[in-house]
Length: 134
Image (cartoon, rainbow, N blue to C red; front, side, top):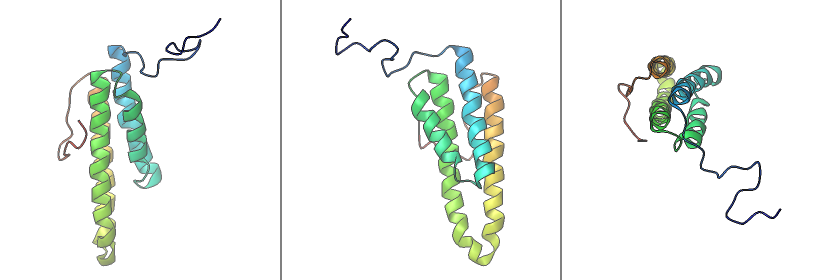
């Protein structure tokens, strides 16, 4: 059987993804906060952004709740990255080592709170975090 150019071949998706159920969106909301939190701790703050960005790009069109949670996670990571970059020059006067640790703890706490709120299905915007991604 010949596949038409505009139809996906058997076993292939359309590339846009199906809308997710509410339970699945809540699960994605938990994952989108838990994975970057773990990545922050395991990589000293460098891989959390990559995890948030990948999850955002994969799930941004699959449901409003999943997109919003992924955007919140990405916003936390962007803010964290900016604050970590500001901490590096401060390491010359030793205070940067303290601020670097504080920023990591702050981001992990925001992600843990975000994961708990997402598991409850609550809409939540992280405090002290600008909305770079909407």
